[in-house]
Image 1 (cartoon, helix red, strand yellow):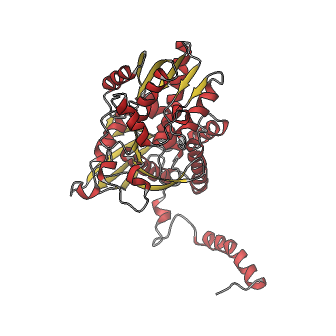
Image 2: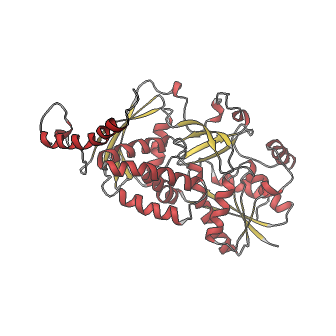
Image 3: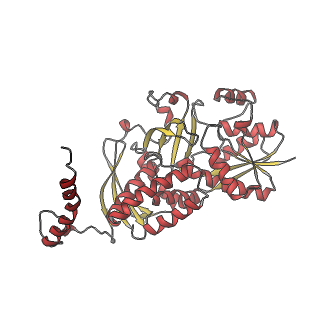
Length: 399
């Protein structure tokens, strides 16, 4: 009997996929469940896999690796897909694929499988990552191969086969969650003109119901990487968990997007990223204090390309790896602390300091002399006027 290693979350799709692989395709199934901060009881998830037919279950705690090697790299890069999505799911897929390949080799399996839908982005992220890591492995995508075409049919399959599908109350939604954020789509959210119901949100309170008093957090960075909150040194996963709790209760990090998917069409996605939102705001502010104008301007362009590479399943690419080298070098002096106010859905930077600040208070004060000689300013101004003066003589500008 052939073996297959399935990336298993314990939700509707992967539970139905596990049962299908075992009962319909006749595989010996090993379920791989990763702890990346999804908030699930992994003992319960493992039991659910056994009940669905798994021959073995492996549970691996990858929270620190996920945050340190994936999320913090994206943070250094300032990566936001289409200026809104902080890439929570996209960053987790290459890590899951890495563990799939590792376990498949240990188990002597020729196949790996995932529960990504046929129009979604994750099928590309899983399968491109597996191909990069071990092109000899074959990938099975049950949701592309079986006869079920709607979520309702999958729900009916699960009910018919008495499959437990987890605690999320509304099965009409497709959900994903980890330490870096949560995603919800489908159901009533497919109508872009419908306000998301509160049941669509997993880790943040409604900003309207958030505390009426602001809360303040101070995040310290070393070379672009957060290392402490309010003076307390924390491991990466602990730091993110703490900020997720604090910022989540203030409704920080909600986003309602119309996103351009890999296949070219748009989809409506609801994202929550409380910790990532605070960290990006703080990191941006510290970069503005410590990086010069040319670096800030170029980094904005590079950040967009990095985000697209992550989103478009190019994690294991020369481009992404080379850009990481650039971003790592750019963070050499991005160290210091940033104070952030959390209030009713907003994360507002209200203070920042760094031993490497290139802010010159004397030069910046326009009402006081000092810092720059007046004759130097006049010469620089004359140079800046040349292009406008030349055009004024040759090509009259429109008024």
